[in-house]
Image (cartoon, rainbow, N blue to C red; front, side):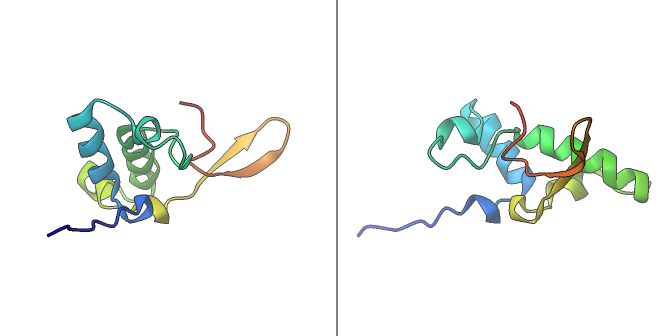
Length: 94
């Protein structure tokens, strides 16, 4: 019997992304370059979420950050040329 497994990167939590990368030794973007949806590693995303959310809530933990789904993540940043701009983690430099 053949089993079909549905893989939707947007449904992965950041912790699951980091686990896959730790186990394989590769970033998801390297494993699925045709997807083009992941430039930052799971651990990089976890760290960013943890620091930003900790400013709002000092009790926010790394474990809390790991529970966030990739598809729910939108990073915003400031650029010198454009002012405030939305940055999708898919567009960030590796």
